[in-house]
Image (cartoon, rainbow, N blue to C red; front, side):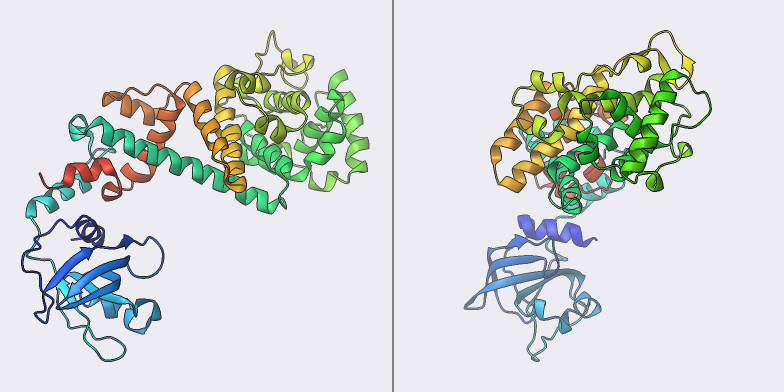
Length: 425
């Protein structure tokens, strides 16, 4: 038995309620089970319970064994003074309140259909990464869509939470936050930390002062990234070195400079080499000027896509690394642009909507997701193999969240799909 299963039984009242009695023999009637509490304190709040002839309104605490009350030291916690009913699987010990009165306890052990527990155990012990894979086809489409709406909202709120944390660190400077988030996502996982560190060591207000000068913006970024050394010097890299020597000293940047060893090249395709990505990052900054404003002021998806579609400067169209000629280096690709929109533009928009308490920004973010094709990865492929039509990023983002935070963690009882398979016929 698990407490999460007992929470599920109590929340949905999936037990025999005929002649309910407390451990002292008083009749019990559940008028309302209460509201699930996911924070500290009793498990359910605002419950309405009639015990004997008295109607109580307060909290409900749930344990596998009644002794859990003292094991968890609730008897010394003022937060549990308002508990009106102690619900347990097994009543192994009488519980007394701090004032010496007996705690009303309800035992469920002999009131639950064993089939419910067996269904739950089957999901819990399933070897598949998606516990309900074998039963997926039996779940009503409305139930699936309901859960995906929930997981998408949860995923967007979590991403927005990261943005708001960065915003607080940046003293409510949205432009600085957008610049750092964009930089981190230009690292495309492999170099995400290095890109973020780069944007943290060279503030956006410095970049903005030189935004109309490509050479100076590139000198600042490549110099601060640690790529301007005295090896493989050609005319272009020499020019950047001279510019950075002046600008780095002017803004006192050299002490915070990254080292080239902090950037990863191993197992990357040349088009993903840090130098190319830095040049594309510079081009995007130059094209848009104010990243945050350009995102917030954009309504249509096509216009947003155009803002992220950039071509790096001429040198980086024929070089993957300094001093090493190449025939042709592609500009930022469609998949990369879509990735940046999903992980930069949309979280910024949602975070701004939360901060402004304006639902329109969330609605715009959802619209953009429906214009984006679904991501293709090991997670979305598993859902496709189950027969789910993963069409847009709206679908894939919701399914990724469902997989990572519910399926892998076996949180079937927090999932409407899981509970629909467990509930009584």
